[in-house]
Length: 365
Image (cartoon, rainbow, N blue to C red; front, side):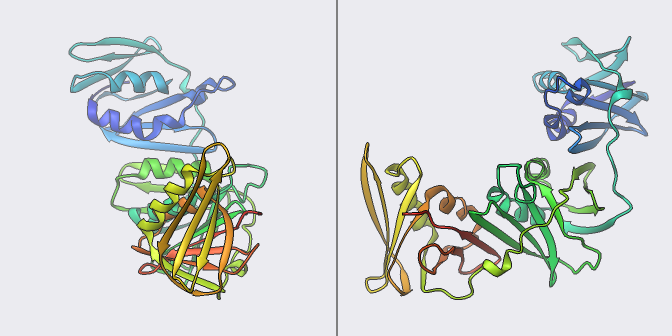
């Protein structure tokens, strides 16, 4: 293998995929990136067996070939050189990197040990705008469980209904749902993508704008766009039937400015206890939305906001973080908050944009 390439393009490619290749003492080959040169392209591949990625960049090919090299070493080196043109060459089972001012040798691994990255082309496929797809994922992924005891809860559920692609995640204490308008696809199968892979997909696709193609089979899902190819294992499980727990009516309905509520929660959090508990008190007769927090070691805070409130007085405790996490997903200046009393889920959403729904369970007194 021998190629010349532009340093910035090589850096871009490594940045997209090399982080997947973490330290792996059991299988050192999984700590490597695979360089595969063919047909005028350098393909950089990485996998952790659960998630794989491949990026293709144009290069000047002097000699085709394949080699595997430790990902963190080659990435750190390329990121820190200042020369524009980089020469990569395989020499005596090593990778020789030469620039105008640098010469280095990096030991390689047997590239034949590198696992094949699967391609689920025999399943179904759809196309969707990349920004819309990322918007759907970023709107809900934080609500997935961090525990792997129930894999279906540590995943993002994606399905199609009435010309909408619906993204859902829950950890059983809160639930986030985002609906994105798409063209109807009769062959779209519901999928469960592991949340740790969702975060990699968001990172890698960030900043891309073209439409992407999603191919999926029973066990795997792949994404193709702009010289990038990603593939994720799918969770074999059943997502909870969550629609039945979303309230249609409320005993107390509140409308207030999103930024006011964000600022008020930040103030309240300063005085919250070790459980991040914040008390929410709705006063319909005064049109006041009140947040109260108390910490025996610090002090206490009462913060009142003007709001439009209909229904009953309400006094319920919540986890501050569970409330504040939702606001980046609400694309509206004003928010709706619906209450149904103690022990019942509270619903948050936007007024001008109703594509996002968020449920959160209250804390015990």
